[in-house]
Length: 123
Image (cartoon, rainbow, N blue to C red):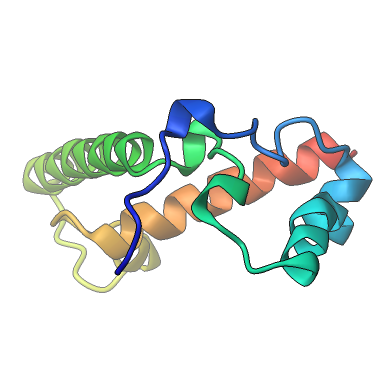
């Protein structure tokens, strides 16, 4: 029978929390957990806690905010097109800025925003 999950407050701190950039890049921060798993089958208590940004509640809020911003952007784009005197049906801008909310557009935009920040941090 499955055992109830351990109290998250009793878990060890997240291994990734204090890992250096090199440790993160090489996944060396997982070595303690891998060593434990080689010695014995892992129990729920052996697993470290989660970083706040890895929790479902954090990510739900993040996705809801992304969707709210996308709906606002699409509304503004639709309004801009309505007020435009000239009809532009097939411009490049219209392909990349849909007038209806698009989860795809929101996720791709966020991806490029986040990777751009990461690249700036490396410079």
